[in-house]
Amino acid sequence: MRKLIIAYFILIFCSCTSSHKKSKREILEEKASYYYKKEIYPEAIDYFSELIRIDSTKGEYFIKRGYCNNKSSYLIRALSDYQKAIDLKYDVSGAYLNIAIIAMQLEKDSIALIYFDKSLHADSTKYQKIQYLVKMCKLNIEMRKSDAWKDFEEYKKRTKQN
Image (tube, rainbow, N blue to C red; front, top):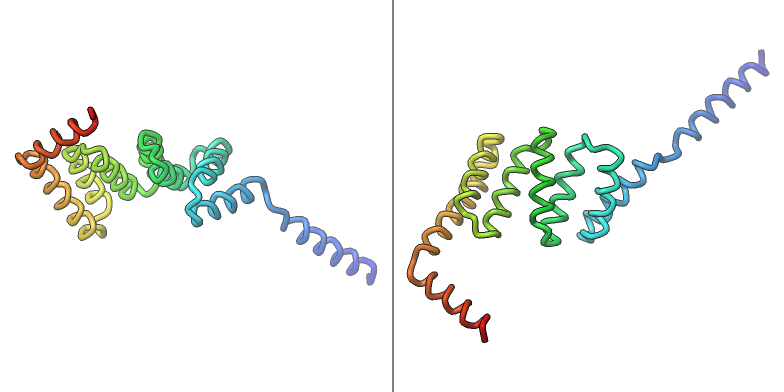
């Protein structure tokens, strides 16, 4: 009986220690998270891309890679990642909000307004933040219509030619 109890404890001990070994996915997630938090975006993009190759159904990977792409000025890639997160129904409001912000960066303010509205419909708790961004967006639209904006655009064209 005593041998049986000892064998049982050895079996439990061995099964516990072997389950602590991390999977490839867990290691990649740790590395991606590390670089993401440290704002080292090129490395984070690589690790999130590898994670997506392993599991393309996890929307969190697309949201975070989209953010890294945006911060690295890969705006089209970021838009694609945010759209994939929306398709996977992961943080839909955040994805719409990020698409709107990119649209503003690209001076596509009317498109940005559409995506701000979609973000608000997906999650009304972000109302104040979105309303602030909507006001900025509308100011941008008005500014672009003004003569001062046209003069500024002319100035930019002239300075590029010189």
